[in-house]
Length: 271
Figure (cartoon, rainbow, N blue to C red):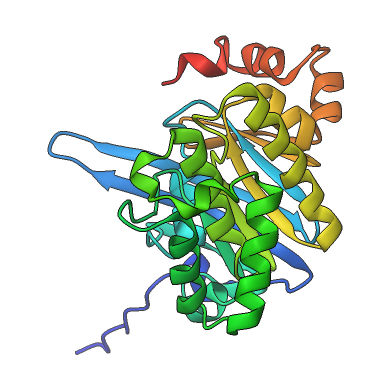
C-alpha cells in the first residue's frame, strides 16, 4: 500500500502578509462578499492601495460603490472575505486592539445619543478613550469653537439639524487626537457654508501630521482636499492618483469628467 500524501492548505494572502510600517494604510487584495439567497454581492472586489503618513487620501465614487465597506473592514467593523491590510503598521486581521488605539472614525450614520447634549456626547466618548479630564475639557472647547457648535453644544442633539449632527460626529471622531482618521461622508447634509468651513478644517488636519482617509461622492470635495484619490466603482478600484494627475491623464476639467470617461456615467447616478 502506497503512502498517502499529506494534504496541505494553499497559502492565503493574510498568511503571508507582512505590514510595511512606513505606510499609514496598506491594503492587499481586499474583498468583501455578501451572500444573498439568489446571488453573492461583491461589495469590495480585490482592491489594493497604500497611503502615506500625513496624506489626505480620498475614496471617490457613487453611493454603493464599496467605499464604506472598505472603511468598515479597515476599522474592524467587518471581517474581510479575502485579502488583508494594515493600519499604522498593524494587521487588520490580527491586531485590531492596537489599531483602535490610534484611529478616529466619523461614520456615515450618526453615532450620537439624541437625549444627551452635544457636549455630553463628546465627553461620553472622551471618557471611553480614558482621556484625562482637563485634556478632554480643553479639546472639547477647541473643537466646538472651531466647528461652530459651541452654543449648540448646550442643547440636546435631538433638535440638531443633519449638518450639525455631522459636525458633532466629526468632533467625536477627533476627540482622542487620533494618528489616523477615517471620515466617511463627513459633510453629507450640511449647507454650502458649513460644508466649506468643514472642508477647510479637514484640510488643516494635515498640519497636525494626521493621516486622513476621506470617503465622498462630492467631486469638488475630493478636488479641494485630497492629495491622492482612489476612484472606486462596483467594488473595484478603477483609478488612483492625485486629482491633477487624473485630470491630465484623461484630459478632463474635473474628476466628474474623469469618472464619466472611465465608466460612461456620472458619479451621482449611483449604482
